[in-house]
Length: 635
Ligand code: COA
Ligand code: AMP
Image 1 (tube, protein in one colour):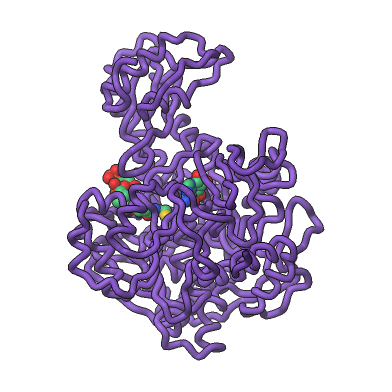
Image 2: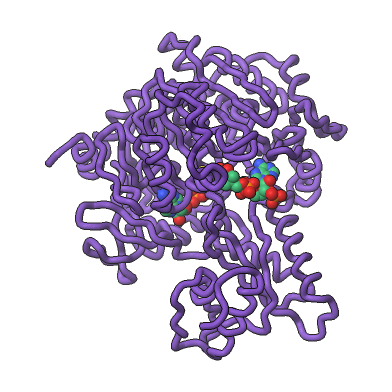
């Protein structure tokens, strides 16, 4: 039986140029493309080659100048941590962005230059991103919860001309000074940005570093507004670093043209949002969800986007989500399941919800980690709206699988993010690169080409892109997720096939944490793995083998390594548990049996692997896990 979803899906695979070419007509182009899909440099595909576009024009000016919607609300900033609500129309936001583009221009930033944005969840973060887009500069937003060293790694890779930051972030009740982190990152990095623009918040005044720093407000007073600069559709819009399997993060590149086209289309097709609706993605601008669905897609669509500076609980209570939905008449929201687990833990009967009128609220979307059925069911019961799990990655920029609410609603199957979204030819592959029949588990992969808006490459590193994503399964993009597709086309995402873990919807590399632990002078060997956590989905746990003759106590060393991870990766790693063991369980060929340790910690049935070099070691692992409150003792 055909429906709007089926028709769109089939056309997107059979006639991608016709499908995306038509959708692209809905966007503003300075010059139309020569080719919709350029496959002249396989496996590196490009969309809309020859086209000239500006992302900021599509996000702001288009609505003001071409559509006469300048007075429509673009942005609602709701910050319970500062007791602030500020609203911006499209015209107001355009004018501020144009002026900040002038500030950047005064600092010498031009098309192709990089700008690193290290900011909390304040409107100025969006302004900085859009201002970069306006002048064709490439922004790279770094999440505030990362430590100075991580920021330094990104500075060295992106080599920004300018950094934009703020005096502080606010985490619950705590004010976190950003300037010391910024200074330390620039001290650590080899590349030194020419200047830093600092937005001073009333909660913390940051002293400016002479000859380098300047004040945001001062800059705005002295700048003239700047117009949009047309860029190639294939020019990079931003770089977003994400965890890879090593300490060196991957610089995911997003281009301009395909991104505008695909993201604008998703607002209706996936999220059922029209331009008069209010939309809220409760994430952070430092993550891909923040880029795509706090900033770009809703503004391309011309609807109202909510920027929320707070937490689901504690700012001030577990009713804050309902307050925001009700107060701003939010139609659909998008967050990570962990946020709802946090609310449910504090307010199991959702008593706080009954204080608010949620009659405008229509759909809850969840992504970023596996949605556990209990969380979906709790949300369905209390909100009485569809709860839609959908699956995507930093690399893909938008959903690979979803229940496309603007096309056709399929019955929800718990544990599945429903079906492949139009544009994504999802296949399950075996090790021989063969497509597997329904129901069989294998590597979730996407047949090339990826649709517009997905990553075209990694920053200045086509080879790493090919090696990491395209090489293992020729002709396909490797998602590094394992799973299956059932007879009805529902996709099930089961686990990562690499050492990435998902902590409170944040993607982290256990390999990077192992590198930090191995840097401790008393540690001979370290393994970090993600174990199940009721709230955060997964949390990292470290296992250390110490050098012989170490004088410090185990407790002292454990405290030190916890501090090291916080210091070198950041608080967001949530690395709080570690244990000292005499040896790590390994195969006879020397591979650490991470899966076995994880199963013990997660209290699953553990069969002693036939390849293990010394089965007795598992008993020691059981004991130390029990000591730190994981797994259970005995067999
Ligand atoms: N700047 C500085 N520090 C930050 C930070 C930021 N922007 N964001 C987080 N941190 C710190 C936190 O303060 C915390 O530090 P602590 O160890 O001193 O308490 C640590 O990093 C871990 O943060 P977080 O993962 O947010 O855990 P939490 O315990 O503070 O809150 C949740 C748990 C579930 C409430 C929270 O993770 C959440 O709201 N998640 C929503 C989902 C989400 O945003 N996902 C993003 C992708 S969609
Ligand atoms: P990130 O790049 O931070 O968005 O993380 C992407 C990874 O998160 C994916 O590769 C999955 O492992 C996981 N993920 C995201 N969304 C889902 C989902 N809906 N179901 C299961 N896993 C998910």
